[in-house]
Structure formats: C-alpha cells, structure tokens
Length: 262
Image 1 (spheres, helix red, strand yellow):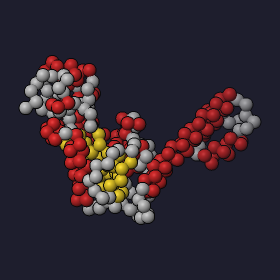
Image 2: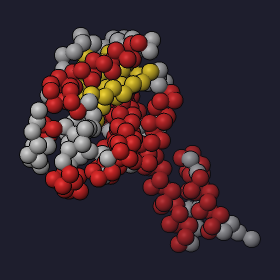
Image 3: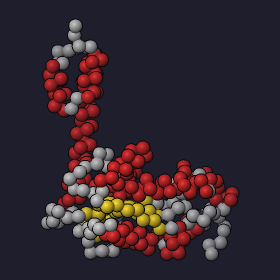
Image 4: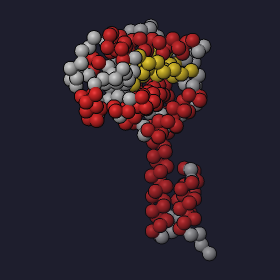
C-alpha cells in the first residue's frame, strides 16, 4: 500500500530544507494533485523561513558594522514609544543583547503583531544582558517639551543599564541625533535595521501598552486599553465630554478642550 497524501502532507509540513530536497526528488513522479499542492506549500514555507533568517541575520550584522574596529563591543539599543499620544507617558526602551543569540521574529515593533510582541518581549527580557524602560510623565512633557523629554528618557535609560553593571561601548539611537554621549550612533529607521534597537522598541511598546491598560481601569471613560492614549475618536469624544484626566498631556489637548493649561 502506497503512502497516502495525508502522510506526505504531514512529512512536508515538518521538513527542513535538507529533508524537503530529498522528498521533492522522491515525489517527482507523483502526479496526485494533493501531493503537488503540498510540495508547493512546503516550498513557499521554506522560502519564507529562509528570507526571515536572512533578514534577521542582516539586522545583527548591520548592528555589528556600526561598532568600528571593536568586534567585542557592547552595544545598547534605544528606542522611544509614545511620542504622539494625548495621554500617558513617553517610554524609552534600552536593551543590550548577547551577540551570539538571535531572537526569532525580532523587528520594528510596528511591524510585529501584538501577540508576537508579547512573546518577543518576554524572550528579550530573558536573554538580555541588561534592559530598562524609562518613563517621562505627562506633566514633565507639558512643562519642558518633547525634545527635553526625549533627552531625559534616553539618558536615564542608559544610566539604568550602567547601574545594572553593563557599560556599553556603543549607544545606538533610532532617529535623529540627541548629542547625549560621545558613544552615540544614530540610525535612521534603526528599529528595522538594528537588532538591539528593535528589541528596545518591542519591550518599550509592550511595557507602555500594559501600563495604559492599567490606567484604563482607573479612567475607563477614555478607552485607554484600546487607544493606548492616542487620539482615537472615542478618546476625543471622552475629552470633550468629561475633560482631562491627571495623565493627559494638557499641551497636546488644546484642540479638544478649553480647559486652562495652568
């Protein structure tokens, strides 16, 4: 009795590239439609896995290329989350990754599904040599502006990493220069190019989202669990209906309320 299509599908769905090559040769004369489809599906899966592996490798190799002539440089990646919301803090993540361990799915947090972000953030925290998320509260943002808030958050996050006993040789920042430290290297769209910046963006995003969900329990009328403080229509309607909460950025909300800013 020959091997069934179902059995072949199962083997193909579990095959790595080497086993697939053997199976493909063995099945070259099998004209059953189910087998041909299973081969095509397996080939697409393996190609996608190879592409993802190459993308991930490029993030790590590009990051190392920014370290100059020191192949053993300790790198901390930093990224901010929550620059634009009407409510809640600015968050900056900082992560030092081990150079010899790749984290599957690591990418710019905006390119990662929420459920995958949770998994990746947990893995980053588990393997990182050090990590931190520093918050800047809305009152500071109102009083000092976003540039000063970013400078405070980034410098505080680096200080926390150093206080954890890890001194970076290179500080990778996503975006424009802040001129905070001579070790600073700025990478435009770095959260999609550098592994440690991507890790920082995911950890900061997951931590801040969780914080906003906790705030939603105290201020349910603003729907923070859904909008995370951003200007959704439901959020704007709530501001216009009940005014501002203690965690709103008053300077960001002047278009929606006539409440005094002092």
